[in-house]
Length: 185
Image (tube, rainbow, N blue to C red; front, side, top):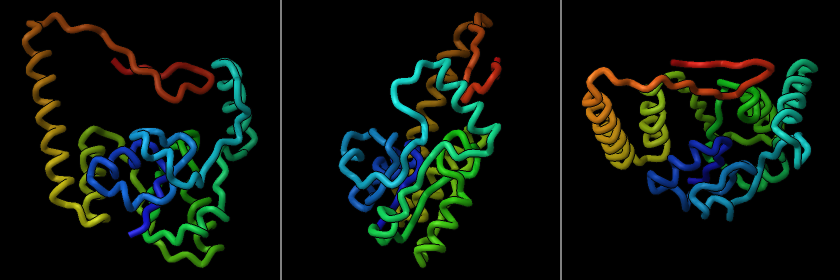
């Protein structure tokens, strides 16, 4: 099987499942494990290098407002890989190549690769994505083992936090901040 991963998180999962040797294409952001950097890069950013955080925010806000893509899919590189499976997302146009761009490129290339879209919104859906990647790569046993190990780690964290006896820290998570602040307590 020849796999193209358009998300750093799915690239990491694929390697964790033992499918690393089958991963032939990745994004410019896929750097874990280090071996992922040896794969063909099929997706890059339209954002200039060297921007400050404020300039990045302004660039992203402006591009989104103008309806411009933040990523470029290299159809030539993608076409040369003869992929059987392309893993992408449709959750956030700021996070990766839009799935419609992927679909259009594959159609243009005459590529019949299966497209697996991972769009987890919850922790349970993240774990389900691991299982879906396992099924798509014929590594269900490895996926089940990985999910079991992740559940064990989550249980250990939960037990550790529960032992704090009501002394819970307040936490804010900032992700994909565009022209404002999104927080979760």
